[in-house]
Length: 137
Image (tube, rainbow, N blue to C red; front, side, top):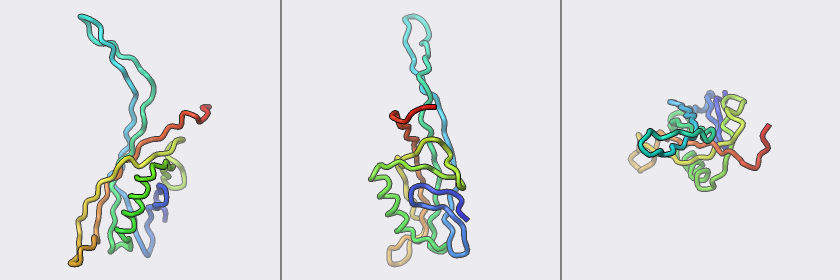
């Protein structure tokens, strides 16, 4: 059963494998600018919406049918290409805009006696890509 997807990474649970994520967070914000006024408090001005940010951990475990090295290679290509993709939760995109993989951090929790990582937790940081050339409705 597919839980979510981003680029060519499918988070899913089946009889053969389980690629899951946890601690999913979405940050939304507005963009504000403070204008200094002599002898008074600054005056804030709302500039518009900010970019959504997604942060979550992906659990890459060999014992769950996942090849951590292969999945890490996919993430490396995604972050180095700089391409934006829809983040799908179930079958629906969570936003009208795509997201790019801004950065990720690897935590190698299980390494065998040959130096192979068998258990890795990856923290992914995605940022919304709002295309200014896209027509607004």
